[in-house]
Length: 395
Image 1 (cartoon, rainbow, N blue to C red):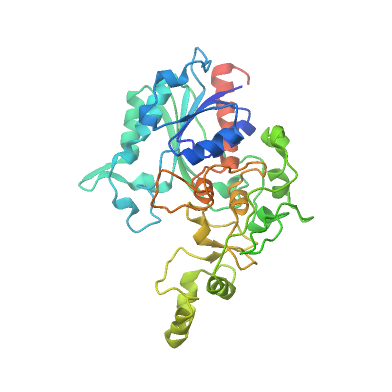
Image 2: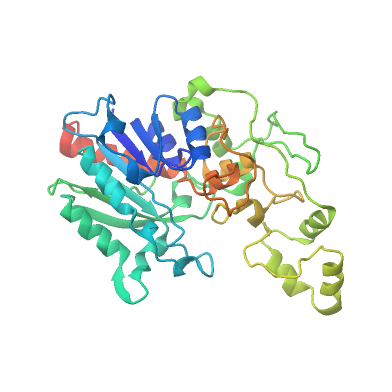
């Protein structure tokens, strides 16, 4: 069974996918306490190290039975805020977060890892180290990989929709190894066909905003994707099998917000409403608070049942509206879009917390920042194939 160390672990998206592919995660390193709570609950066999990764040292791995020849894989998905192009000012930050990749390399050296997998947003490929320095972060990353002995590496950008995830989500990866004769490759598929929003939400009951009534019973409607999300044998999560749905609680909305949602057609957002309603008509809607005074481009997008969703982010509560109901998505619906199995319970943290507090992530933020488990599963299959061919001699 391949072994794994999970850096910048979040709530456990990479671990969940790798676990389905047959990996054993020995330890996970995460700074946010609510993510650690979710991770530890769903992966009790993993040592969850709740600490700033810069403070993690050899003592944290004592007693883990790390193989003498090193762990097989270290994954590192450092925070993406300084690389994202989603916000107007996000890329203007130049701080120590953009160099946290060094910690993933350090942990790989510490555990003598055979391979490292870095994950981030595609925007990292064009981010420079400083305003007045044209050197790219990814070039520095690869240089420091080589200095650490990981001279064999490949880059790739993958779209999660190609791996059965019902979400358009492009992610940048670097896979590196310290063995120069290994032929590295990236996954092309994981055996699952395309999935849509309708596929993702199949079997989840509708819930009504402001009622406080959580949906816990499945409906009869299903899809191949929905069955996969309930297949605990595939995910190797039989001990978590539960016939009831969790985290499917409707949010509270003011009536004016519900009235705004009712104006949205599938594929429309708040921006479209500002374009459709102008002059006195818009002013009237604003007077009744149905439209806000300011237009936000990425806000209140009504999903299209027949298509994958846009990228699920940490702001997914504000960004998405249910494809047919006049409400925001539930935590479980967002988890389905990310391909977390239904038995995955987001126990850590509150449902909502102000984004100004970066020491806590609510349930929506945890999901939005995670790596889709089905995409991690595809990497697990490919990396196992590489290990078997070039190290363990199985193939």
